[in-house]
Length: 293
Picture 1 (cartoon, helix red, strand yellow):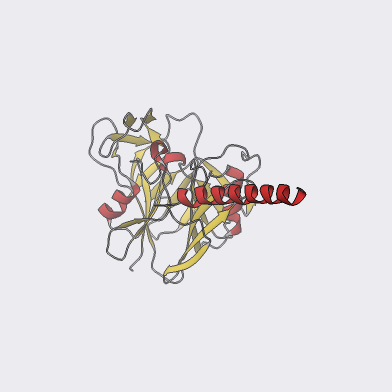
Picture 2 (cartoon, one colour):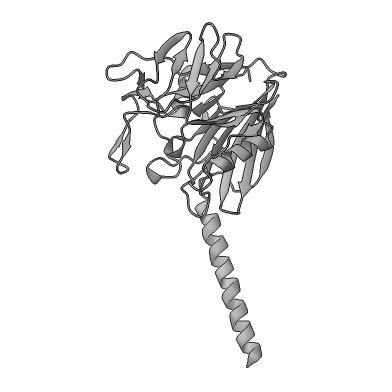
């Protein structure tokens, strides 16, 4: 009797495990496999897929660029001629293809925005929007960030493609703002939230500026990736030796895209606009990187 009882519970446990892992792997169909990867996608450009299961599921996509290897140029989405805003909303894939960059991530938060349902949302591609924070492209400051009561940190990019956080050069070339600083002078910023979990986007630079780190964390996808807190995002950037790092807009905006072998856009993460996995959100601005590959 005891033997039959033990066999019954063994089969119950095995069946439960099979159902759990079956549901988990079924949930990954059409999304990047939840397997850690380190892959050189171009000379001096390395892609990492970071997978954590505890304290919750988290799949992060990190690109590290060695600026000593390649001639790297940065681009912030230029201003459009449009009424009701300063930019036409674009997906990150659309930005990459339109402006001929090889790597792109979503940028700052923006307004107006709403998402009531998969069919009731704003903006659509082409709708007028304005970034929340200070923004410039090719010397043209087209958003001053003054409407936002909470000052946003800003990444400045000089004509020589040097990066600096919150230290504007004499002549502003490109500038893009973000949600908050994550790392300052090699130290994780105090009091970063460590409870609220969402998809995230961030950029960091190494101590000497040689390495640029781009990170996007997938989230809001049960059995796949829940997301990250700001504290976890900072630790992720710190693990790649970021000396300074800034969070960009997250949630349904988070996207990391590269130019594929066919010249088209390849999305490396699993975006989640309107809770639809794989759906990219049109956003206001972006950060693009030009590398001759």
